[in-house]
Length: 181
Figure 1 (cartoon, rainbow, N blue to C red):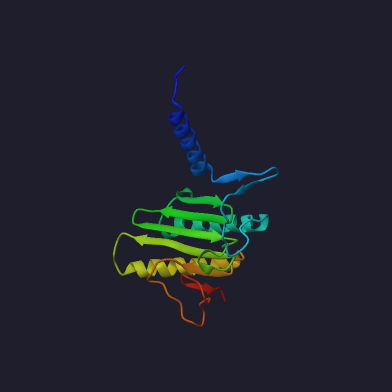
Figure 2 (cartoon, one colour):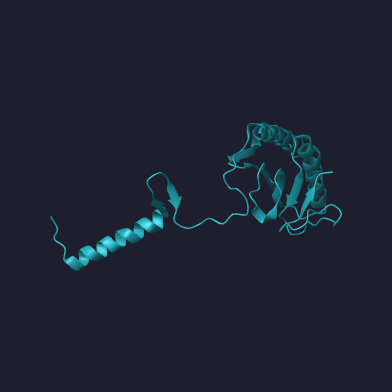
């Protein structure tokens, strides 16, 4: 057995106490575990994905797979769908193109975006030609047509070159956002 001085024991206990605060960040109460620091969210963060929204997202993903298969001569299985508590993220990594869509039932106040939204978070082409704009317009047309068909009400775009006119823009959002007509 290793003997430690009182000073070393004290320092070791202090270290363990700090470590427990850093890794856990929670304090125990008799009934529940609550965060030790308050969480400031603009809306209720306890929302979960509804069954209807999950079916709508799944149907939209199937349409997305068909779109990339036809548009980019890809396989139906080349698209990826990552589910999360508020919706899903669709990804496609092609030979000269990368597309990422966030499809949310609830935005939970992120960037002041409304609920029921499709966010184009990444659109990158490797060609650098004028056809890139045509690819972007085709993707936006797909999102407008299929997104509204599956019950989504808004479209937002994170790429900085995208803007919407004041007539269609949703006010007070931190990234460009519009409501489907």
